[in-house]
Length: 330
Image (cartoon, rainbow, N blue to C red; front, side):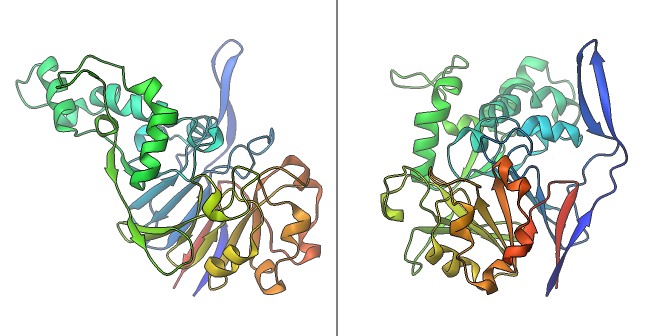
């Protein structure tokens, strides 16, 4: 089994002016969300929350016709637009944790699927002779236009109660019993709870999106006072198809990296150039065994990491954003 770095040909990267002093950059060709069957990792950005140069570390995972979006940060919809994509291209998604650079556009995702998608897809879904009001009522009541959200039940309660409820629950009048009269996660998402796994020493789950297998595991991210994973708030790393290890946002934790990444072909590890806070810093990550460093690309980068030659310290390099992608072959 092997993998390679590929730079997709998306044509020229041009400035598109919508009106005077109002425009954005985009590629001439749309980013394809399909492969010839191989697993493909597409980094939409490689930066940390405070980076002003590298967007946010969110991913698209593609294998054949199967697609999973991992996180949707505050700036990520802008990056999607550069590739000719929007949140309406997201049918399966997971969130690693609730910081804004990972869930900041999740409200936009939910609202556009409930209130915009019904018009975008009307020609395909509206029945002959059906009035527009009846069509909208049917689409909403049947839940036909909802992205699938892969999320443990416990984290769904946190994400909804602490992040999404205020902006989504009171968007419309609904006919429900009880006094709350508010929308629920099920109005916006098809919620898919992953399977809980045992025997890993930390909470771990798995789910499939078609042929893509995802295993997630909790990591020691926040608060900075948490000495063990079991004391930390929900935040997860992941293993994709038993081939790619992604640390997720995490403070340095060699045991977790070895437990989940040692057998993988490629490792992606969170890294900043300064100590402190709730992320791994470069001096710490350099203590990983040489066998791990030589297959590790650093990501979720602080801007200062761009000044470092990490290959001199035995790392594979820095992760690069799309249109660079990483393809895995049997």
